[in-house]
Length: 541
Image 1: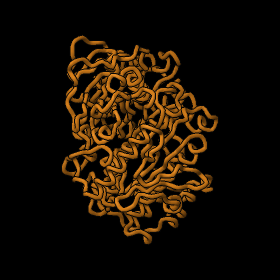
Image 2 (image 1 turned 90 degrees about the horizontal axis):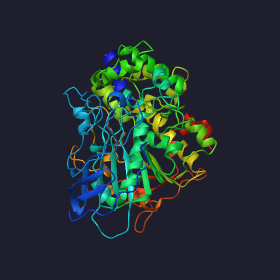
Image 3 (image 1 turned 180 degrees about the horizontal axis):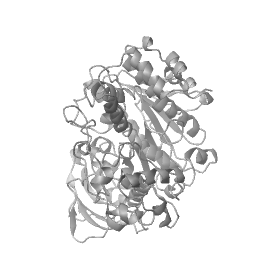
Image 4 (image 1 turned 135 degrees about the vertical axis):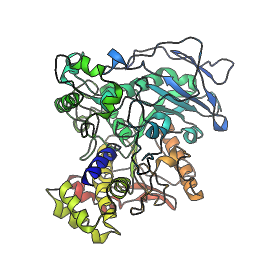
């Protein structure tokens, strides 16, 4: 049981989280209303709901295969004729997340059910609103979550946001070892003597594709919002601190993922990432430094994504390359950031999802008070007594929910608040907490009411048929949220006539907007609700 719990915990924890300049594409789409001319060739999409259009599987970079594996992305090969863009491309290489006892996936996206071994995966999708005038529309570029090891842009349906006047772009990017492996031998062959961060390079290549092409889809290249959830949010956070992303986006959305604060998905140093990379290379039989690049490029994708247990526990960025020359906290402290208006938040019960998966479904059933205490002592050895004193099992409906509260507050809620406090000194910040206790769950877990779990808000922004339908009250909340997100993408401020006022966040007032079916209003009780003075005493005042 302990081995199962450890393996499941590693898999679930992993869920937490440039191209050459080209002339702008022509906005003229010809007589076919579903055809658009991009700088690399023309594409034809499909009619979407409400008069909108959907373009799927558009290449924004060349396939990173063979000698292009573990190198910066290159532009796609131009094509002639009209390329059909009516079906999504496959996801980047990843294992299927079919971990449930019945063989089902633990997340609702199709990529989580199928997995992939194809490296020909650098594609994006575009949802456009119905044409209502000549003015260019705001753009949202969305980075999927999945611990930088799982997921695909095609898992997200941008129709609801497009219906509110936003051009939505969802992106595939290299994942796992293929997207984030650093190794001394790969650094040695690089122009800047560094390696890793290939997934971030892909994301910036997609943003450059947007700069050159989005006008042809009706989008405004001067109003691009970069956003994501979980690892996609942490990656968005990284781009805010990346000098090579300067000017590529003008607002940011961070949902349940930080790269700055304590317990966030902060990047490793290049040296630490290279040591991890050497361990990974050894696990796939590439131990000789002189032949490591050729050896690694010869390993089949299926073997790379399988790796050695523990070697791929969390994949993420590293500092040292030109993409991230500074740790995010240093970049903020010195003002070397792409300071843009930011909409940032978390869900009220983030960690319940991981408890439901790791404990209820894959870890042998609900926690007893004794097992809860043992877990806290193993995970917080230096301060277990104070954690248990702050979160006694007796103060919660069950040990499972006590354990969930610890993870929620330490890993999500308080880092999000710390980010808000840090950002708000330089930019406009609008902070939220999603809190629908009846959000449709991703997985069955009878011993852990999942409440507003990690990623619960996604179904309210990106409609899906994979979950139970929203109730009328939940649909009203969904409408309000998509309106807020759309107005933020358009103006850098979610407020608009007829909507409950959303105050700009300031550290002194510490007001965070509650998004719930029965209440949309600011609260000043977030920090006390999540014990942020306990987890981050330096940010308590």
